[in-house]
Each structure stands twice: as structure tokens, then as C-alpha cells.
Length: 323
Image 1 (cartoon, helix red, strand yellow):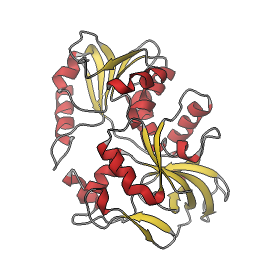
Image 2 (cartoon, rainbow, N blue to C red):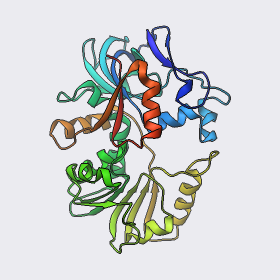
Image 3 (tube, rainbow, N blue to C red):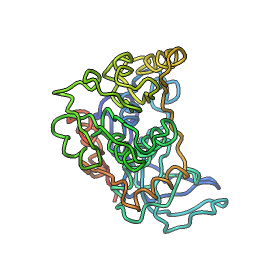
Image 4 (spheres, rainbow, N blue to C red):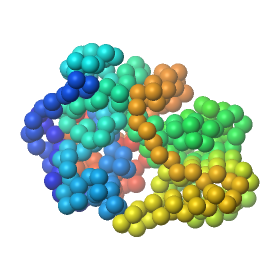
């Protein structure tokens, strides 16, 4: 089969299209013919090998797994002996640990879910990691409910576009922070208020929020706390940091600070799995969440897709079609 591979860390230039062996599956796995996959920030980290700390898991000198990609949507081609919930021909989507940028991928049955019936493969491939991050951040960690004031910093990005919609579906009054060109998009997703960060600093406007989901990390913890209510919740899911540890230092400081202040400062750690995808499917099929695709590239153009991701500051999601 054809697959996108990389054998060293670097820019999009290290990606290539190669013939590789068809994946073999265990008794608890599915073999999925990939219809589409998507790019997440985690995929960029894996490609570049930064922050360096992640190489302890991914491979110190070179990637342990040569086929990248986490999110996919496709059709089940074969199932293992202990798979009971899926059969060949089913359309599924999933977040896996790697191998999505290929014509076929192996998917543990515990990580797969039936694809929303109202989505194409390209749309469905944008959902698993980003949608799950937004769902667990808003519903499970921040426990967003009706009437709460929620701010999403990075509202036009892959996770942000889902977070705005999920918070609105939970009944919150949502404020999205984005650049000028994305104001209309964020408003169309359900944000009651939209802040253009090129003209306004949300931490300095005097408005307080019950929940802030920070997907950017471009403000200090002190500034973010200033924009929270006295018992509000700051959910951290990103940050720049240095090339060795990335945003981990900021997150450790937040956890330490949370022990001595009334506000909750929490770090979002996301667990993939079918139960979360099923919840997203229900929201999508009810029309409460709509994936946003900025641009689609063919499998052979995966390097160009990553260049676009790196250079164009894209909004929403970039998709790689394997059809």
C-alpha cells in the first residue's frame, strides 16, 4: 500500500510517499481502508521532534513509527477474532497513535466508533482528536453549564472551532478570541461575542469569565486569572515554552498556583476512546456541532499539507484525503 513516511525529524521536507507492507491486525483490531485523515498540532510535534521531551516516547534519534497521523475516517476492511461491534463495510472514525496517513491503517476496536451518518470521510477525519479535546475540556473538566460565561482563546483553530460549538450546545454564553479574518467564522459557530486579538486583549478588558479554555498560551497565568471570576476555571491545553520541555513548565506552574488560589487552574489531558466519539456523534447528528474544513490535500500532497499548516496559520482543520 501507499503511505506517507518519515525516517528523521524535521520540516515537511522529510515526508515522502512510499510503498509499505499492509498492516497486520491483532484479534482486537480493525483493518480500515482510510478515506481521509487530518492534521493536528500533535502531528506537527511528532514530525519536528519538538519539544525534545516527547522523543523519549517517539524515538530519541529518529521516529520509532515511520508512518505518522492520528485522526482517520474510513471503511472497515477486516476485523480480528475478538471484535464484536464492527464488521467489514462499516464506516468508522478514530484517533490512533500513528499510521493514519496511509491507504490502510490498523485501529484498536476500543478507539473506533461508527462515523456520523451526516459527514463525509473528510469531515469526519477532523473530529476525533480535536473534537474529543474540546468535549473533555468543556464538558468533563470545566463542567460547563447553562448561563456560564465561557471564553475560548484560539477559537478558530482545530480544537477551538469544536470548543465554541460544544460550549454553546451546553448552554453557555461563548466568547471566542481569534484574528480579524476569522471573526465571522467564529460567530457563525455560535459565539455570542468575538474578540479580535489584533485590536483587543481579552485579559485587559475588565470582563470576567466562569471558564477560559486557553489553546494558545500567549498570556501569562496572572493575566488569564485576571479575566476569571473569583472561583472561575482556567483550562490549559497549549503554550509555547522552550524546545526542550514545551508548555510543560507553564502547566506545572499553573498546577502549583492552583493550590493557593480560589480559582481552578487545570491541565487538560485527553483520553481517546469510543465513548467520547459516540458523544460527539450524537452532537454532530443533531446538528449542534459541524466540523470545519479549511483545505483538503491528496495523500501524495501530505508534505504540502504540512507546509500549509506551518506557514499559513490555517483556521479550522487541514485534511489529507486517501480516497
